[in-house]
Length: 247
Image 1: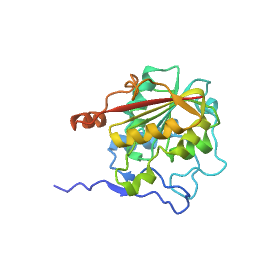
Image 2: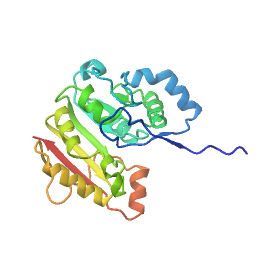
Image 3: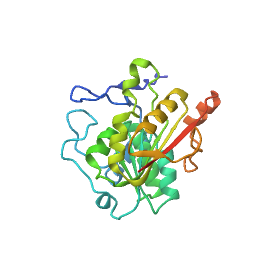
């Protein structure tokens, strides 16, 4: 039997960036059905965003209007790091009255999402294969998003890698720009130290206020229980939710 190649890490170039990115790209294997769905249906779901010098950067001057992208005016929910699409697909099916945008740099995950979105006949879902902060800062208009979801981002556990964490002071500035007044930033993690870091950063952000009482928010009832979250629970980790509202 031929040995299957392992998934390889592909580091997104930082040569042309002034900030570290919060991800490591992985070139995962796609099934024939996923390859076919990607080739045949990606234009129906994946936004055509011109890239800058780096593989997942957003070129200067690129911007998109949600009304034009979706063909209607509706509340827009953006999920950062959608993975294989379990959360965003469930939400798009459950709430046809809303628009959903999944942001992911892992192409195999995007292909799986495209395949399932096509099978479900979803018309309120789009995908973006770009660095999420650049999409929020450059591509989407100010105050155009009703909710931003960041569920189980890479905690970058080693201290020397903390600079690569997505949730930082600069991200709160970018998120406040794109969120409409009253819009909500929802966060979830199974890494306690990162949860405390998130809370500290958002508590200090001038444009946000807590949308929960006590130490942690209740579990977001719109979040499906994924295999990833189950793994954290199985390891005895507490799942921490946070929710902050744009003032």
